[in-house]
Length: 306
Ligand SMILES: NC(=O)c1ccc[n+]([C@@H]2O[C@H](COP(=O)([O-])OP(=O)(O)OC[C@H]3O[C@@H](n4cnc5c(N)ncnc54)[C@H](OP(=O)(O)O)[C@@H]3O)[C@@H](O)[C@H]2O)c1
Image (tube, rainbow, N blue to C red; front, side, top):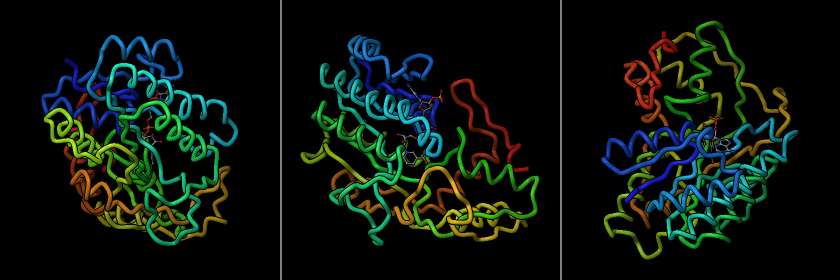
């Protein structure tokens, strides 16, 4: 039997889940967008009916927060409708769906860590389409885990850490916003958390209250400016990071000024706690430096760190 099907397997989280499933010896199928477009309902239903996995991890999403403002049809097609088709297909074969969602479902006005029960009020199309995806998953598959996370980075894919490292090679100074607070979360840590859920389900150690919505992000908080400074401090770079306000860096999408997630529910129910963002960043930089991040025919050299 197939333990795990990963869709959106070429994304940051999908790639990590696939690589860790392989290391854990799970029977795992990983499908990229080219192999399974989740907006194709018939294909989604047929594929999951054929594979009949124990668990489906949905790593597929429209994640371009600014572009979504002018491309809302595509954002909703992937984040709402694609999630719905996967949930329907999982329900039909009795699979658990693990669906990723975002801190951007909140408007940032709370000022203290958001709990799962806090009302969502997205500020932009991306957050609204992800919230609609959550509703679809809840409505169509009772065996679901929705993991809301934040500010993802990793060794694979496009992200803030790799962008800072690239810019730091060619610029002496950078201006980065310092009035949005959140928790940078390592995709590898999310991969490990998801692996624990899959292994618990497979091993019959699933908690009675294990389904539902959970916040799952790194411990600790910072701003994008604080994050950038830490990246340069940990790589011994002299790049100067100037703190600026969001209003001085206009973007098409509004972002929450505060999107820290309270992750105590997943710690209590599933015994999952991610490491602090600084420790996880150090692990990521170490892996990038080692050039060992090879998986699925992709290799990442230490080039970005030079
Ligand atoms: N990135 C963040 O900072 C962040 C923060 C909070 C929550 N999240 C959520 O966490 C999850 C994973 O994020 P991530 O950073 O791993 O995303 P990512 O790196 O942008 O990967 C998303 C993947 O989805 C694929 N995809 C897009 N449309 C698809 C479709 N129609 N069918 C199948 N695959 C499709 C993309 O394919 P291509 O490779 O072909 O583009 C990409 O590989 C998402 O649900 C996201 O909303 C992300």
